[in-house]
Image 1: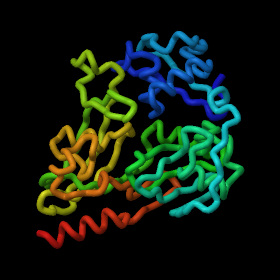
Image 2 (image 1 turned 45 degrees about the horizontal axis):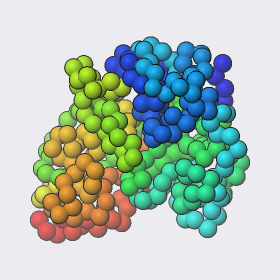
Image 3 (image 1 turned 135 degrees about the horizontal axis):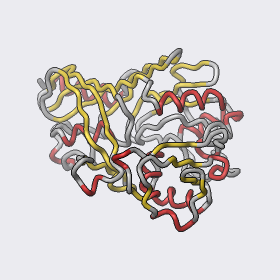
Length: 315
């Protein structure tokens, strides 16, 4: 029986045969080492049977149900409260709160001693959040943004709300709109559908594959998005991106594959000296999130606004 805060997913046909630790890493957005620890802790079950410590490399067939027990994983770890840390609330309601995540700030800590994350600041104001959702160091976390990506981030503050929101994210119901500055000239609009697989975890990197034909594409998931060009800025273009699915580095890997990497992206883009925009970090911003009664918007952060102004002045 699935308990409160447990995570569950079904192995899709294109994922059949992938290693258990790789599947966990891809679906949970965690390093493979952490996935292996979950297995070793007895926190992972496959089709109702607890996976033994040696099962991390087992190949899991399509159709299998994988479940992660938050109760086993979370233990008694708590995020360190940081009441003096800045925290900007964009919107809030019963059971949820939407925050404005600055670029460079992680969503949650990876160890009890780590600070400087949004969760550290949030639990200082909402100590009752401890234990919500996955609990422990991920209490209340509904979804994630890359460390260097800015914008709207949603947390659940009660268990019923977390369960409702997680189910909505699994069904791809939220409307997630991003603003991105990409290299090169893009005009019009389009839709992108690509196979994506986590190729490396530390530091994270996603590879584009054809899951139907590429034998290395085991564990690949389809990433779908729509984009619309907003403004041409010489060597770069400002675009709007609406995600239809959610995958680690989906926007960054997809547009790099199309030949238009996000400006300032040191993982998927050109070397620093080859980036004509001289962007200080990856120029990707989660501008809007809407789901049922939830609506939150984040204005362009200062670094993106200043870069856009400089590019406009240089045209």
